[in-house]
Length: 188
Image (cartoon, rainbow, N blue to C red; front, side, top):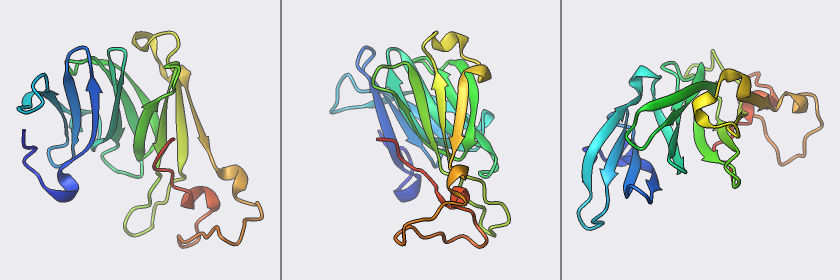
């Protein structure tokens, strides 16, 4: 398997379904999630692609659990709110909900009851738009087929805007608030 791209556009995030022996690979260059059959790890083969441009600008992260693939998809304009896609192992859409701006990582909680995204909220190149970083929490305890926007909570860092910060915390953006400059990229 060769994604057809190198460096920043190559395969960045990979997750795996042990039942179907498929790997799901974020292909930034093609703006797809590539589906690979890796039943023979020495010869992985491309068996499908999920075109995420119909849902936004491109996938940033994927995770898999119990027959469900989740994908963090940024908006066509990266400063707008992105999406979390819930798909089956063939790539068919089960549900879609809105996340914060530039969802950069998606993961299931250890108990599988929730899906979380770290929403980076990165500014545009001119700093004319600088959204707040945030975390989106989706309650999937009732099953992903029934997930709606009512199951979604997004928390931000605005409570820290007027807080006394430790000297080691620096705010860089021009006229940025703490909530704008805190740009989460990973959830442990």
